[in-house]
Length: 259
Ligand SMILES: [Zn+2]
Image 1 (tube, rainbow, N blue to C red):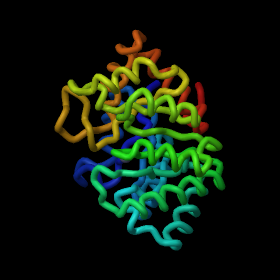
Image 2: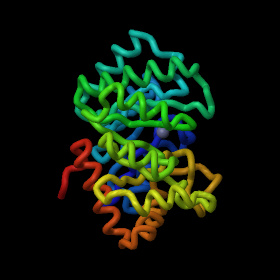
Image 3: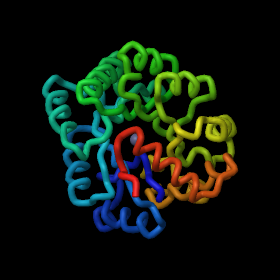
Image 4: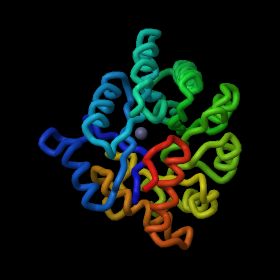
């Protein structure tokens, strides 16, 4: 049983080939669970509706760092209300993206802190996005006591040192299609080395399709390629890697239930 720990299913695919068709293809490929991630409030409502219709889909709800400038107290209140839904398993994605800088950095940091506080109030783990701000991300996680709830460093693309510090804070590392990219040796190194009880796999669909689909739209069916690569790096059978990562997700967020 393989689970995609992070995918974007709302608005990612053309209407005639929407989320339901993408999910159907993934199920045929053997993918049994999906954490669908919202990046703003409108997305959050649609992700929750998708989870209500599909029992193999659960939700991660937040306002993406790219959208941090849109944060208001009203958005915060509505997000927190939606996060009380039992199908909402994670708070986020949230974090810092100082590569694209689509929202001001101080707004990104303030909104990241608010997500962590919300996660602590709700006792749910945090879905973290970090790009080009490794030390700052770790500092905010530490200062806000994120170790009390833990969470996922999604689409892991940092080095061993960052990984060690994130693991110390109780976080899990989720590997994406990047592990199949030619120039990703440092990330493969972390995927081979990380503790077995802290690794996850994801697609981050519709972005970052693994080899041999690189550059094309990604979809959750392709998490099988990510899992195969991580399994090979760790000298494990793909079925075993699927078992491990699914169990790790359950330990973190209580889902999916063990058979
Ligand atoms: Zn994402």
